Length: 98
Image (tube, rainbow, N blue to C red; front, side, top):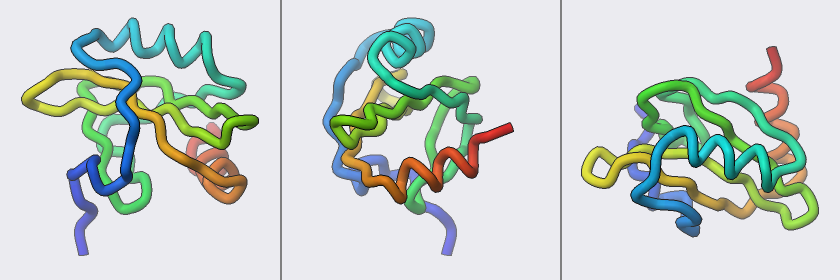
């Protein structure tokens, strides 16, 4: 089965909307313990992450959160916050390490 493109399946909290990619990357750098660049069409939890260009995904380890950029075609770039566990952090580190 092909990955979904519906970000709502992940139950995100919207942190930033109606903003630009650089503002999102700056926010992630300033608020996260770890940051990783994700490419357009990266798949997370069977959802394809829509992006125009590579952007930063961040970990808030203590709060058990992942900050995830996403582009909704009707709204533009936004930054989402997802609940995460240690397994999620390790899986993403493995996928995104260069």
